[in-house]
Image (cartoon, rainbow, N blue to C red; front, side, top):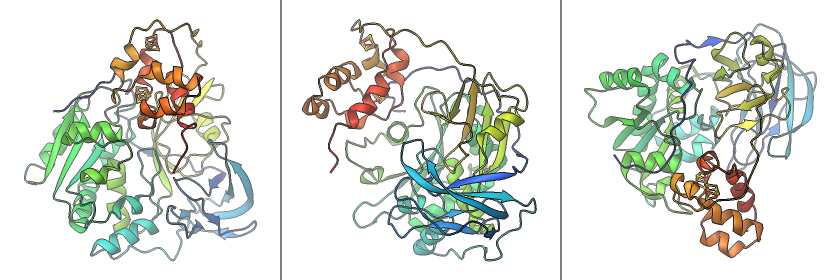
Length: 427
Ligand code: SF4
Ligand code: SF4
């Protein structure tokens, strides 16, 4: 086992035994036309239009994009300008649900019998990586085997962020879907072996998957140390294969494709029922959740405020999309669940520790999984020294937050790294 630096966190996986249940259908959903990396979609519906569940309501001809489908049946009551968490604006369809959840009559399971039909089906499903970054999955699958052949599929089931158990529930509840999704991808993309990586704090999932794959020679179950950030792409590739993805490289340059475990399960289900990505399994947890903590299937577009009110957390001080380390703080609880949401965490407002001067203890350097020098990056950022930032390889920073977590002076190192990246001119 190859090992990079990282930190030990309290797991707080209090919802791990909570079987996923359907979230009550909300009265309205707000579906943004940008829920992925790349170009936003054009909204295909207008105020007053009736829609069905699974109906395509957003699409784009851009290379890097993924179509958007309605998660409910009902009527479009408005198309609004929606402020995305990154500060840009896209259109969003507001849909009043009719409670019937009538499926779009055009939906049918795709015929998948080769590489081309698999990629086309995944594109049509609107699938983006379900691990958080929102990379359109059909683009990831569409590597050029003559230039960057992929021989290893790494399935990311690490789920190293505290609290979140949605991927764990996918493993436990949809074990066969996950395995069938892996086999489908390996078969049609001609990938020789798979390494399914699970953190060692989920022994029952490891045992279950080992049992299920004992007769399958080319799927290996790897138990990873429970250190954060095991699930980060570069870290899990190194842990599973020993290969290093250098600055500016993609995993395919090292012959590797990384896929989130829930993504693999979804691909198989889509080939069986043809229902696009319109529902997310999310974990709802945090010290402000008064009742109904757990895992839910939630229609994409459900407002977070509906979830907080179902769980008695209307007065939460801080609400996050995702985990406490890499999650994003909501500026408004009327923001919706999107395709990339894997958790809603609600906390009381904590006391912000005072930032003091750097004591040059080196902890930030010791904990960084990529051996970066956050204290030097902070200095170069303050001096706006772009050449120094490049030498310090700031663009490699994956914003995992280990440095800031370890810093006894409470310096906001991860935030500064993000700002510093903005100074580097993009090609
Ligand atoms: S961990 Fe904080 S105090 Fe220690 S060297 Fe890094 S920035 Fe300075
Ligand atoms: S946030 Fe960046 S610099 Fe800090 S530990 Fe993570 S990768 Fe290293």
